[in-house]
Length: 446
Ligand SMILES: NC(=O)c1ccc[n+]([C@@H]2O[C@H](COP(=O)([O-])OP(=O)(O)OC[C@H]3O[C@@H](n4cnc5c(N)ncnc54)[C@H](O)[C@@H]3O)[C@@H](O)[C@H]2O)c1
Image (cartoon, rainbow, N blue to C red; front, side, top):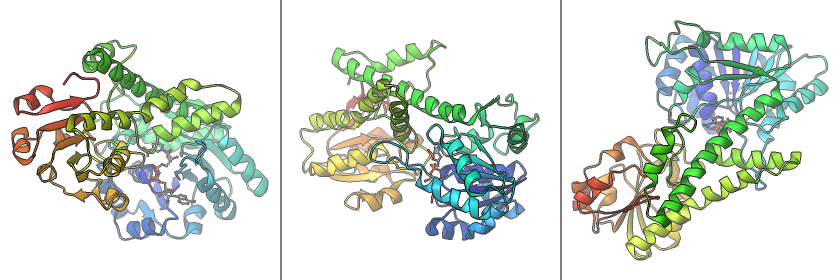
């Protein structure tokens, strides 16, 4: 099928490359001139495991192209996926201005009977409102409009796209359902020739077919529930700190119950990134405007917002004041295996450290470039041992694999004082203790 993907960020690029992998002819379009230039030059403007190989393969196969001309991208589409950003407004509501610009181009350029699909995370009723707008502005053109929320996670996005837990189709007609099923059909067949792991023995994903409003609500409900699990674990961590209990044992034992499950029951610095923080707020606002007091979500957000304060309190207390101290920071991206720093806890940590007059040296495998433009006063080095040189304290903010296997006796030689605060509870306290470190974590006895 001829597919256009509008918005070539984390979701759009993965969608475009994976749909090319499924055999479709894909055109990607982004209205950011910097991204257009990078894509035209054959570079990706972001880091995501496996994406570069997949995109390069399908540029070569001719199934994946990027275009600067909106008319070309919109004009070619049988199915048009909207993957533009929906950032939070100061009120917490989603900013739908990018979607509004897309609507104008659909009206101007899209051919008759294009299936328009919202993949961006949008508030409930956005897709029907888009359908109504297109129908009123192009009464001659019977656009189909559907919702197909995306559940991929940065860091494992290609895998998640090709092996989703479920595919949700929010449609208002059998024609739209049939077309969307055809887009995903190769994923639903067995054998499926997955480029990541052959042979693919996993069962095909379930397809949930519903109306657009329900599909939009499913996405918000799922993300907010994940955020709730994280905040629950973080509330437990604070309680464990007060009681002298070990939160890691608490969540381990809880997670062994299949009704609860271990995933996302992770205490630490809290959730960040471009999805959970904004989606929880947007869902809360949507509920409020719909007449439902979803204060449970307000609490989820409040607990999350306190994480960095708690973490900095621990660091300040351990070091004996942060002003004038040298602090090594390991990890800047909001999670491992991505260069994304949007709403990353690291940003608030860096801000707090600099505000209190600390000298900061930071290291991250992928996110230093993006962080540097926001915090030019921080010294950056790719080598974690270099970051630790002469440091009074080391703060671990992101659980990148390489940080889990550091040589702590070498770290000890590099650092001035042997102090570590682990914001992700991912280091082994016994190993640190054996290397002469004083170790603090979130809800874990030192
Ligand atoms: N990042 C994730 O993990 C994730 C997962 C699931 C869903 N989502 C949702 O998907 C959407 C996109 O997220 P993202 O992380 O890919 O954002 P992003 O910022 O990485 O990408 C969005 C892209 O859209 C482009 N854009 C904006 N307006 C445009 C327009 N009118 N025409 C063409 N391009 C335009 C931007 O330049 C940007 O490159 C959001 O609604 C987000 O909530 C994100």
